[in-house]
Length: 114
Image 1 (cartoon, rainbow, N blue to C red):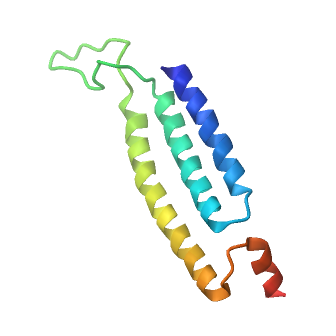
Image 2: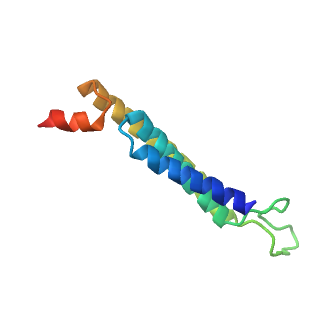
């Protein structure tokens, strides 16, 4: 299970960086989304993925070695909310830039500043 998640994380990182280097605002936004998802999966995988065992113990307080760590799960939930906020801000910012310059190519926007 962890090997599959590591492969998916690598694919998401590489696709995210590739899209960040493109010259379109839409591709930059999608690249940021992919990088955010890759980071969330990386944090989740670092917390040890186990199936069938809860993260909390019962009333007896017995703790076995095969339980999931709840801290990375809480961090991923927080990161998802922060990621949505950043994505909304970037989308609004790019839309305002496009409305002002009517251009979706960052290089042409830089040339119009001179």
